[in-house]
Amino acid sequence: MQLSKAEEQLMKYLWKLEKAFMKDLLNSYSEPKPATTTVATLLKRMSDKGFVGYKLYGKSREYYPLIKKTDYFSRHVNGLIKNFFNDSSTQFASFFTKETNLTKEQLEDLRTIIDDEIKKK
Image (cartoon, rainbow, N blue to C red):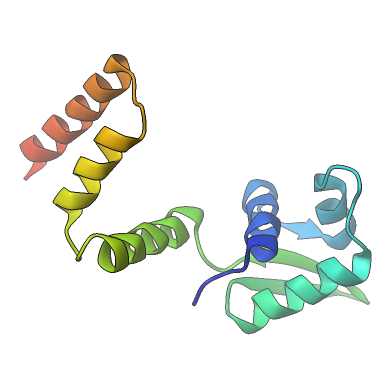
């Protein structure tokens, strides 16, 4: 299951805060801030999808993520590779390195990461 853009933005705030009440989440937005009811609706949908949990304190809810940021984005990237690059990580890496205008230093950093991963295997 995937998050909408608005849900993803809210989830980014929640990942950063780790735990948050509604007021904390609203304060994370820049002006103009969304309506409280809008954020409440997003949180309900995200809870129904299994991305967000909450703990009740009287009538207040403290929200927390049920999925790690790295797990969500890993699933997202793997979906892109499967759907747009014929399930080929090599095609994805080739596209990424050629089409993203990486500097020489960034490419060298990538090479170091790849070399380290090769050594581990």
